[in-house]
Image 1 (cartoon, rainbow, N blue to C red):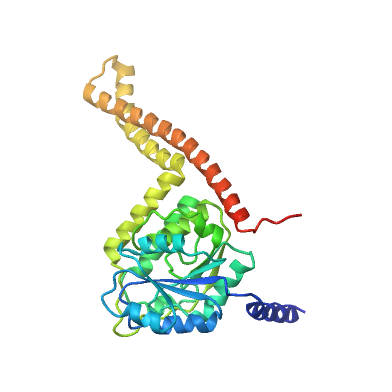
Image 2: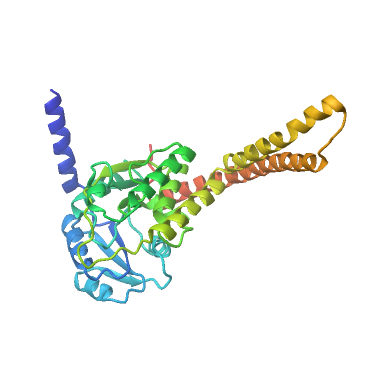
Length: 335
């Protein structure tokens, strides 16, 4: 019985790819000097998603990326502001579609997984699908660049600790997104922090997320990664801290309040004990310092409560904007 059920579900998933229409799907590819691979990437996605429109946004490439993309049938646009985040911001503004499939132009992500990422979006089952490279071990086998796996795990751990959600792969550049998600997502990052920002936004705003395991392959010979492990890694961690402050201000400032309180108590308790025994304050500068730390503790808590109230108001306004986006796209269900 179980085998029959599994076969039926498998057949349903296979058939759904033929039933669903991809003419309102946009494959969006941010590119910088990807002439070696971009032609194959475009051809692969045209084959796997018939009817979908492939957009290539050229981010100041010095090679023939734009020319090759046009020759392979992609819609090519230029983005002069350098950085993947800047490219994504403009793509999200320019393009209207029911489903957005974002993928890198380096041929490291399989087009064969495109339907698995798009179908939950088109069927209304998810708002963001995440191409997970880590669960099946292919990323660890194929990726030879130092510290990339460590950095991904570090970011995953930070997001889980702050938001309580565990991504299988938080740094992947292979994602499907719904139109309401894209049109209400405020892009703040300029560079490779965009993947982290997308993930945190999806978790914090309670969008429906689905992880989809995909096979990862390393870049072909002659193709070079644009990611700088150290500098971009620092920017990603800084982005997490900034979004932590913006999205969860009470928790953020409570951590600082706790630190100030501990330091203040460590400095102040011995002075209080001496005062109770002798009636004197022998270390007056230390007493002032301890008092200052306790004042900072109270100030941090007050700041956290005030900004938390502001964040809740902004959250309500954002929720109303999402409703408006749904209704303007004709997706409001009528009973």
